[in-house]
Image 1 (tube, rainbow, N blue to C red):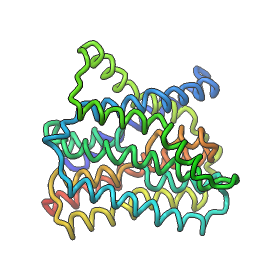
Image 2 (image 1 turned 180 degrees about the vertical axis):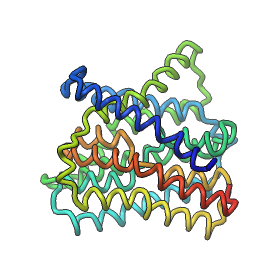
Image 3 (image 1 turned 30 degrees about the vertical axis):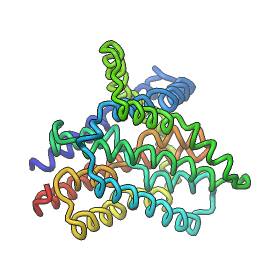
Image 4 (image 1 turned 90 degrees about the horizontal axis):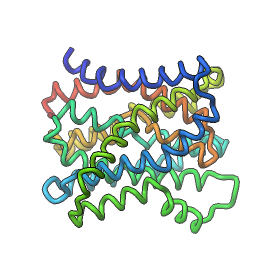
Length: 313
């Protein structure tokens, strides 16, 4: 029951935020045009600032574990490449291909993973988890940009893809955070307080906006592109990652939890904004986020209970 409550307490607040957004829409308090503007602000400023703050508050020198970080990076790259070849076999629409690929590999590591890490390990043991997330999140952001670049009706351009990666706000803010952290730069307390408050505001706002834009009428059109993505995101990818990390490489404690958080969480809320900006199927992206968030309450509880019973953490 305790392990169930860990997953329950991490997921239910997210669902309630999304339900609040849907209520605002149905009650007519917020129009879709306003949500579109919120989306732009979240994608361009608030989520990138969230990533910057996360890296800024990381002690890179003392919390670094090369093997754990290397595994997460190699696994993420491998999963992306394999799925990039598999997705076009089953989906012919370019508008959906990028969304499916992004939804399968891009975990909600910041908005969902950090609270889960705190619940499982405690705030004082999050060093390696934070470093992994600070690396995997921008890496997945880069993969998302590449996914929408290769699955396009336009001729693929490496130059355009590189430009999109380098100008992505999340990539820019994350690398800026790394530079600041490595150099040991500290901001005045008033800046840190403001940044912390904005970071805490991002999670509920992003979830409210995502819930408010969810179109239930589109559910009747749901097909394998939704169900297959949910299965890949919550079951297939994390099962393979945890088997290799825990079973073959003997990861334990924070090292294994970093793998769990990086691979087993629901699809990132920011993936919806990314899909809309990139011209992908926004409705499918929205559905993937909602369905993976709801289903992750059950899948994560199963993973946590198995790892607990096997004394992996």
